[in-house]
Length: 204
Image (cartoon, rainbow, N blue to C red; front, side):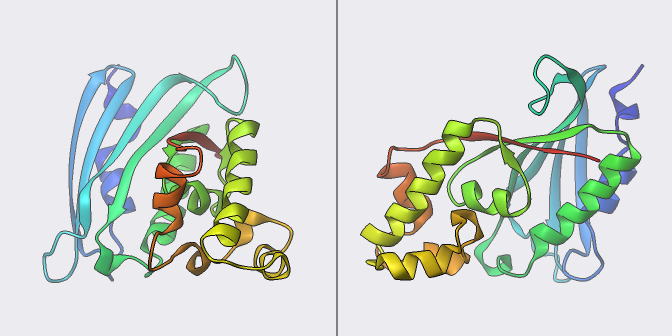
């Protein structure tokens, strides 16, 4: 049994290409074990410019503990990096790619996506319907968002309530940017020095 039957390289190549913004890609994979496949992906635009700050990394596991179901084992893909260069951000590339990831994972019978969120990913991944593995982490991030709006953005309670609409994770991301310090830097270096938070999404 080879790790390549977890998901084929051609399936992976098809995920990270849309013939619009992402024209070509380069996929390098290796089997860490017969049950674990590690992949590094580069993506390029129509001018053959690399669109990433560093390679996309994915790890595919035949048998890994599920975060959604304690003490159960399943087929898991771990998302490790997907960091676009600044000029390619804000074009909905990540959300478009994520739709294709889900389709490929369903075809290949994966049970769950896992990742460790940091920086603004603590909010972005929640917007994409990932769940925190720890209720404590989720509560802490909710508090952090509201404190950032109050202490850094100097917003009133009424303004904050209007911005978060009873759910801090619903906030528009432009509220989390500031000329002095963005939320992603503040939450990591200031408020509680929050590092990585485990998150997951079940693949139905």
